[in-house]
Image (tube, rainbow, N blue to C red; front, side, top):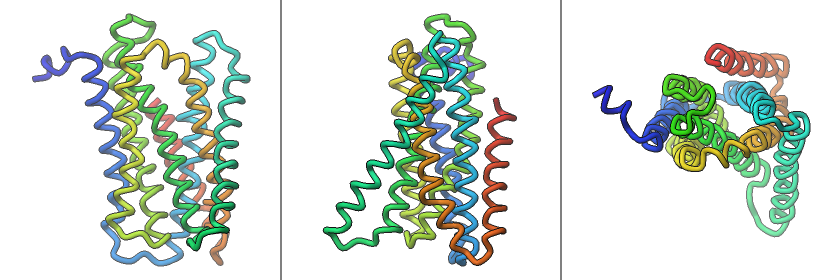
Length: 265
């Protein structure tokens, strides 16, 4: 059975690997089913925790690999990362302004809806280049590129999968806080990871072209994530009376994601 799997086409292997990374996102999002009712202090703490997770992920999962890839591809690292990072934040900034303009004309729950939308979008955006990276890792085996081995590709997928656990939680629990049902909070939490199998297939097929775009895409996602954290998550968590405790949960979220990223490479 193992030999059969190892002899599969790299595109099929990339698809199976990214199905695993998506399932880990879904597993993390499933945390909402263990709580019938969550009090405001816990919900505010999860916003702080989500902010910490996203800050850590933006560097260790996105910016640091983007810099390393830029160097390996003989690009100008600081320029590529700056353009990508700033563009990601700018896109969210423009989207924020457009949403505010539209909300003046329609009766909607502006703040909570916008926060939920931005949270889902930013983590989904972050999962696209991760899926591409897994696809490129498997697709590179066909091209005999430096460091391209099946073992390395499997370890990359495994590492990203474990990192997706807190990310799924970082979406579903804050959405529950905003009044979403447990089923809907879970649905949108796992949905953020479904882009990984899609982008994994694309990455494995267009490995050489996507490889050149990855440094920009990774830093672009990082910029979007940092914007959401600074604009929405941390300010909202700090509306709690126990601001100091909420800040501590941000540190906990950062630490958990940092340990996963560094330990898993």
